[in-house]
Structures are given as structure tokens and as C-alpha cells.
Length: 316
Ligand code: AMP
Ligand code: MN
Ligand code: MN
Ligand code: MN
Image (cartoon, rainbow, N blue to C red; front, side, top):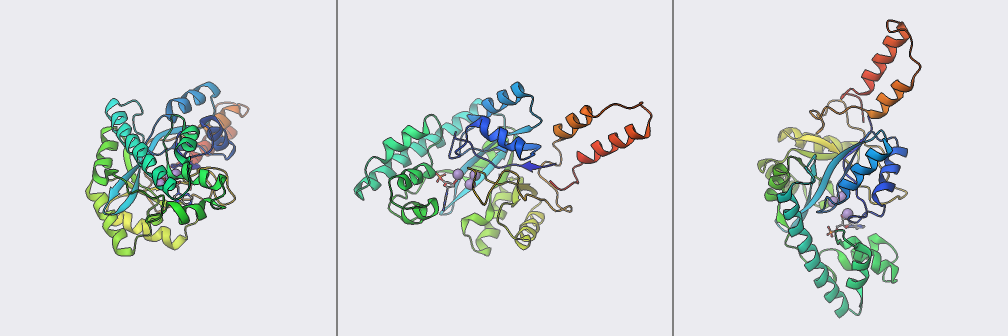
């Protein structure tokens, strides 16, 4: 089964609308996709409706990516299988959105002082009802010629300590894990190698996350070496965490694609081990095959091959 448990739509800082993201997932042969927008679940009802309407053979996992504060770092916690209509959870996410708006106002003030006016208006016009993120500011700055790539613009204006960076007051890490559990989901430490932590801090982070009741860690992200994957899995095992996989897809690029190269080694326990996932694609393909006599060899072989496609042990 092909599984990707970390992706974004234009309800936060992804570029694709919900239907385009789902259609892309299907053309990439994904069986399972989690939509995990930043501090919002507003894409999820639309995604569910689209899948019902199209009957596409894709399983949607209701997800979210919560920004949290841990020491002086911003750590992202993905929630999987959360209930997207839980009122308490929605109110908690609304508090994060309020923090996002206040931060955006302050970012725009700072940029204006640095002779870059009009950022807030431009960003709000692009965001609509979605989550306001630094990526929106980055796109505005690229569009208005302040830098020529997202990476360069983050380095110059939006990274910690730069003109447009405003420290945030995110929910603390342990509370975010609790929020996800209260909403019926599993908490996953996202892209642990993206925080530029040294080895000692990374171990402290995983220890604190596990102590807070965290469930899993993303050990498979794009552009990681096999050695890094092994080290992350070793950390998971030390703390009884399961493993997750995610592209963190935001938009089509030359270096990232939904579900691409997210192979989980056979000896790893995946976060979905108890979800009872089945490949809708394999089921619909086996239904489409011509039916032979019930007891024929052909039929028994077809049943066997469908069963092996849905096995949890096959690489994703
Ligand atoms: P925020 O949650 O508003 O602080 O925005 C963080 C988002 O900015 C991340 O989820 C990434 O999508 C994006 N981001 C962070 N650093 C970079 C970078 N160097 N280049 C491009 N995008 C980045
Ligand atoms: Mn993002
Ligand atoms: Mn993230
Ligand atoms: Mn993400």
C-alpha cells in the first residue's frame, strides 16, 4: 500500500485546492492520504465530500499539524485520525489561528518599518478563511522582488532573528498532544530533523514528546538518508513510539511528490498498525477482474494476491 500521512492544501500554506490535491494523490497511486494543514481542519469536510462524490479509491485520514512551543523551538505535532467536528478541538485550533493573525499583524508592522509596506493586505487577500503562515509572507516577498526563492526569502527575512520574524506564543508541546488525544487522534512528532537540533536536544525532544503521551514519529520524510531513518527508528524504539511517513507536500516541485520514496522498512511498526487499513484500489481492481468459477484455481490465486496487497507488512 502506498501511504502518505503529511500533506497541505490551500486551507493553510499548500498551493493546491482540496480537489486538486486528492486528484493528484490518486494519480500518484496513493491508497491512503492524510491532509494535515497548519492548525486547521477546514479542508477535511470538503475532502470527504469529494471522495464520496467521486467514489475514488483513496482512504482519507483526518489530520492536522499543530505548531507548538518547546524551549525556544517551534515544534510541529501532526494529529492523525482526529475527529474533525469535535467542538472543543475546533475552539482550541481557533486559539492558534488567533495567534497566527496577531503574529501576522506584527510581522507586517516590522516589514513596514523595513520599507516593505502592504504585506498584511496582500497576505490576507491570498489566505481567505485559511491559516495565515510565514509561507504566505514568503510568497509576497518573492512576488515583490525581495528575494528570488522561498528558501532565500526565509533566510533573509523570515527565519529566527530576521526582520520579519516574530516569536510566537504557540500552545506548549504536551498540551498539543493532549488536544489531539482529546479529539480521538494519535500524536506524531513531525519531521524531527527539520528543527536543526543537535543530537542531545533531539533526544530530549523525543523523550519529552514520549513522556507527554506522544504516539509516533515521522521517520520517513523526503531527502533523508537510510542511516538517518535507522537512527530515528532506534529513537522510536527506545521510547515505544511507532513510525510514520510523510512527504509534507505543499506544491508540485522537482524534489517532492505525494507518496514518493516513502518506503518503511519491514521491521518497523507503523503508526497505522491498528487502523485496519485496506487498499480500496486493490479491492476495486480485484472486483473488476473477470469472475471465474468460485472454486477455480484462478479465483483462489486472485483472492490470495488481493490479500497480500492489503497486508500491513508490505512496503508502503
Ligand atoms: P509558520 O507555521 O507560519 O511559522 O510557517 C512555517 C512554514 O513555512 C512551514 O510549514 C514551511 O511550509 C514553511 N517554511 C519554513 N522554512 C522554509 C524554507 N526555508 N523554505 C520554504 N518554506 C519554508
Ligand atoms: Mn507549511
Ligand atoms: Mn511542519
Ligand atoms: Mn507540514
